[in-house]
Length: 267
Image 1: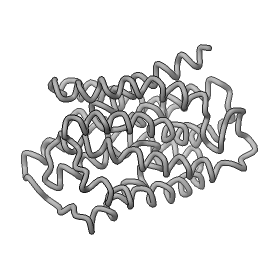
Image 2: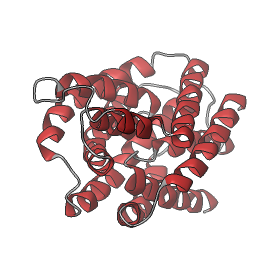
Image 3: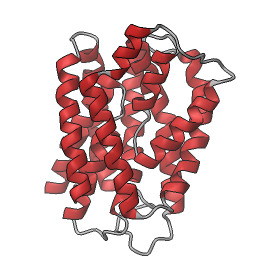
Image 4: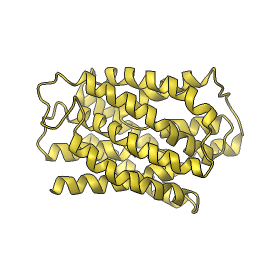
């Protein structure tokens, strides 16, 4: 019962993040699930894989909700979503295969470095600095978008996120405003999540250390609890992102991610 409450609480928080920043919430989900799964007594050799696979599956539902909310605000660049998604799906599936071949501790180190990097971005706003320096530094077209999507999907699947931390800066570098970047990142989160989740399900299906209620490296009780809450709060987060300044909130979240990264490294 306590575990279900934790999953609901976690889902509500990550749904807000998905709506506000277009990041899918995986940067919080993965480290939180690592701690929860350790506490539930799951085999330590699969905890990180299980956290990533479960995170990606949960992100799919919050990404759909967040994308729809941003669509209503006309902040999704739909002409780029399809070509980006083609590359993201391929990259995410390949990334899941690569991730499940990495040592559990090495994968945890990669997640820690990612959390520290995203935390620093939230605090120092390197993306905003990019906006102030130039309006456009690269071209994103139907031809180049699948290639950009491929590396975003690959990295996102390894880390267990919806790709917003990469897609939003990419869109800004392509000359789009921050609202379009967040909205488009939210729409691209679902293809990354479903492809990555299927990969973790397939490549983890024969692992002998899996607990009950799993399909490969996906723990369904967590997916259900997180998804039910995140679908509701993602809409709230999307509306919130269009009505308030994000500066202080992003900095606070940045410090939070850095602390979480340090805790993951120490676990």
